[in-house]
Structure formats: C-alpha cells, structure tokens
Length: 130
Image (tube, rainbow, N blue to C red; front, side, top):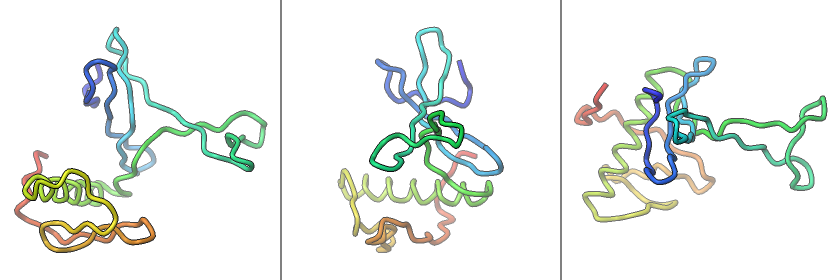
C-alpha cells in the first residue's frame, strides 16, 4: 500500500498520487494491483507522423501521465485551491462539467479560449486540510 496513493476506482484500482520531481509538484495517474503495489501510468508523446516519439538512441520515450500543479509548494497549493473553488462552485450551482468559458463563484473565468488558465484570486475561506 502506498501512503501517497488515492484510489478512485475500487474495481480497477485506478487513482492518483502526488509527485515531487525536481521541485515540480504534480498529480500522477497511477494504478494499484491486487497485491497493493502502486504503479505510475506511462505514455509516449506523439512524434512525427503521429507515431510514438523516440529518444536519440532509438528507444521509445515514455513519460508519466500527470498534471503539473506548480514549481513550488506554495504554487501547487494555490492551484489546488483553484481546483477546489471550481468544484465547489459546480456543486453549489448543480453544474456537472464546466467547459471553456465557464465561470466560478467569483464570476471569473479560469479557462482561456486557447486552453490556458488564468491566475485565481486568493480565497482565505477555502479550507485546505494541509
């Protein structure tokens, strides 16, 4: 059992874990097998001709499936607060899946038309359990 793993699918063992690699914090997609061992999910980026990308030595390049949260712990915490704010706003409004153009409870749009996100305001009312 991995203390940093959160299982979200009991049937197939799918979940996520928090990663700190090179000072960058991220959520990594992971799986837990029947013995309780946790493995990171890996993928190969797309290279030329929609083929899996290769390294200079000719071997396939694989990277963990992840979402970067920030380059510092404070930045990662702020970005998790943004996620919580959006999820709480959805819960309050009954909205299930926001898409581009969706606004949160502060009336601010965190999704740009080009797919990037906008910085969120600090919200001292968010109760983060860490």
